Amino acid sequence: MPKPSQESQNTHPSEDLNADLSHDLSPKLAQALAGKFLVFDGPDGSGKSTQLTMFLNATKRAGITVTEVREPGGTEIGEKIRAALLEHLDREEMSLRCEMLLYMASRAQLCEQVVEPALKRGDLVVADRFLASTFAYQGAAGGIPYAEIEAAAKIAMQDIAPDATLIFDVDQQTAASRLNPLLDRMEAKGAIFHAKVRDGYHSLVESDPDAKRYLGVDATGTPDEVFNNIKSVLERRFLDR
Image (cartoon, rainbow, N blue to C red; front, side, top):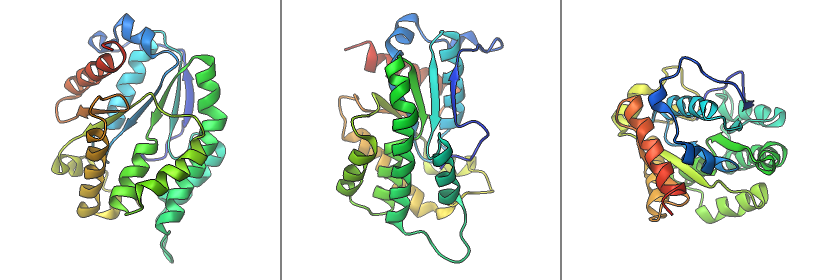
């Protein structure tokens, strides 16, 4: 799961003057993204964080008002939940359902306090992980039935749902080579666990053949190539329908 950082939620009106202009969004795509809720998700080591930074810089240059959030976290309450979730515990192991429900608790606070007001303002909301992570980590890899996750999500999220979740995919060997040696509790669970996580993400993409909710992104290329893949899947989702 993502590492803690100093900023958990920001609205971006500024501009990156040193950016590569080949990373710009088309005016039509920029207009279509206003008021939408996008999620960047995928297995640890997929390069998601690099692409999220590039995408946020592109939205700034396009003049889109963006509210950026992350999971778990994004609020004062959520950040405290995040610390508990990612901490290595010496004396006891967190139960799987406790883990899942803590993610949902953080998500409930985030949706009510940040996401819903931002969408009502017409902001583009961009989340670093969301519900797809719960399906992949606690569901596919952990073994909690998807129906239980969906029931908890309905309570936590109410009527809020992403317009699209971008799922970044690389082979397991490449992902492992990108992981920080100072692993948090989620990243330290081992190769078999992470293979199941990747399979869980694949199942989400395969469950949505029309690519309306889950957009698969090939993340095996260079950062520039992957960013072009992002633009392509977003244009197909929001402009070609």
